[in-house]
Image (cartoon, rainbow, N blue to C red; front, side):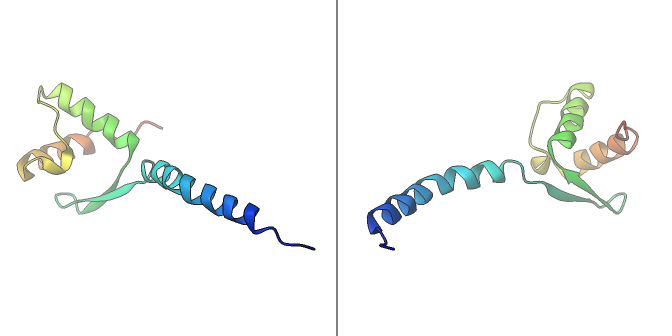
Length: 89
């Protein structure tokens, strides 16, 4: 059986070209665990938690900012609100 290096080179070039696209897509679905120091528990910060955070922003009439950029007193307010609004299952 003869090995054709031209096809191997084309295959490796294709893999190299597509790998950033595949890896970037996976990174957007990654979840992050956030520690809530006021209730001593962890929350998974994913798309579902973002929905609750945006709801809190609207209900409290605040401008939208990323959660991690909120000052600690406002983060505490969010976690208190969030513990009173559990996930509906």
